[in-house]
Amino acid sequence: MSGTAVKLAIESSAAPKPKLRVLLVEDNSLDAELVIRALRKNSFDVEAVIVQDEDSFIEALGTHSPEVVLADYNLPNWKGMEALTILRRQNLDIPMILVSGALGDVLAVECIRQGATDYVLKDGLARLPEVVRRALQEKHERSLRHQAEKDLAKKADELARSNADLEQFAYVASHDLQEPLRMVASYTQLLSERYRGKLDENADKFIGYASEGALRMQVLIQDLLAFSRVGRANATFTNVDCKGLMEEVRKSLASAIQESGAVITDADLPSVWTDRTQMSQVLQNLIGNAIKFRGTKPPTVSIQAEKTREHWQFCVTDNGIGISPEFGENIFVVFQRLHARTEYPGNGIGLAICKKIIERNGGKIWVESQPGKGSTFKFTIPFQSADEGKA
Amino acid sequence: MKSVRQLLIVDDNPADVTLAREALEVCAPGCQISSVEDGVEALAFLGRREKYANAARPDLVILDLNLPKRGGLAVLAAMKAGPDLRLIPVIIFSTSKLNQDVVRSYELGANCYVCKPGNLNEFFAAMKSIEQFWFGAATLPPRGE
Image (cartoon, rainbow over all chains, first blue to last red; front, side, top):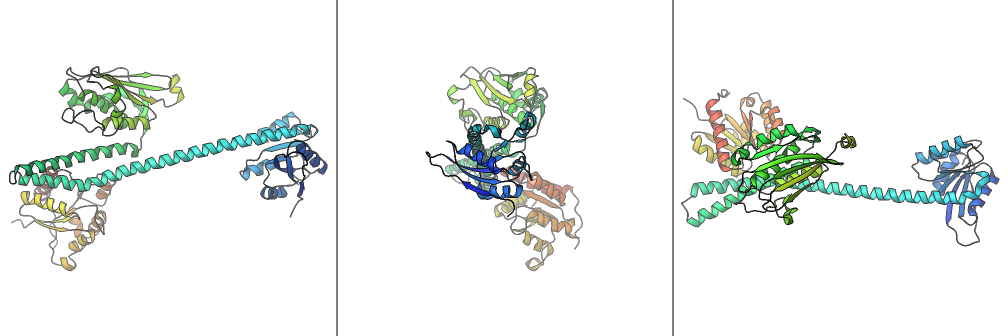
């Protein structure tokens, strides 16, 4: 064993004091005694190990598990500040307090900057108990915060994993469901074509229902796949010029626009930081809905964007049939529909996809509407950086 | 005189084989259709081994990707590595729409990739266009007997 490690257990006779395991880096045994006395006096039940070189310091860290390290700055064979390097290397969060003769302000500040918790002069040891108490308190708070952060990170991890599992499940399920369903759809169609009018009237009707059901389920599965893909596809963020994007959206909705005589206006749309394909899908779904759920008048749809302090806020306003506020949340849920299929076609996937895209983008989407008074769908796109908000 | 067209369908789903036969019966009544259910059988058929010693050399192969024992891509790779078999046009006929499957198929030398339609009429239409193109418009390589 190299160096000397002297263990001093100083029994206390007064009221129970908190135990404190101290690792003292000190070559002068008289100074060491003074330090221990200062701590013991009405404050701690001290159990100290005194070392004066690197090897015995490292050994004592393992055997003594100190709660605090008190180190002299100048030692014959070592430097007190190197204790800090060792604590760091071993990833130990133990407060290190310099207990030394006068160092001068510059050096003292430098030691603290390097990570010493505090600095106590040997002729001011009366301060020491308070300094130690504060250091332990800070460490306690630090470890609580650290634990809370760890717990939070773990929860976030679990959530992300369970979300990923769910998405994977939705994808695999819908993908693998397609295959047997294709058989049901194809063969009920074959039955209905080959045996129409050859069985009785009921048989034709039954086969028809089965065949329609299978076809509808195929569409649902494809919608579900599209929905689960929003999470699977890697979004590529770029600066997307929404004015240019609107041209594409108009083109893909051309037949609906022409058929309905819809008038679509957009004014001064900005460039925003997002995934181009997904942004296009959001606008297409919202404008498509505005046209689909029109009233008796020809549809008018206006798309506007305004800059708030935190984000861009887009508004898609129509003069359609509107939505009762009580359904305002429901409409964003997968396969939620408010109308019979015969009134308005569709599976209730469009707004669910919009919501998923916008939320993955860090934004929010909601609707403001009254039945018969049109609807305004609003969504937000966060700025690329805080600077965008100031510009 | 045109000899009888020989078509081999490699698909483990008998329902799909039946649908293909139904479709071809209408549009290509003269076509001789054989079918096998997995990749190992497919290569035995093409190599005329064991029970397939007297099998006819197909003019065209319709190959599913998801097959038991040896997958469709392995069968495709083996065919394209054979001096005679590599001449036979292979049509990949799969439900998969994954880019990686499509790209890999063409990389391995597939002659075309057709997604199995989910709807009967589209399925029939796909079979019909395969038949019309490969047995009509296209000139096939001579059979290396």
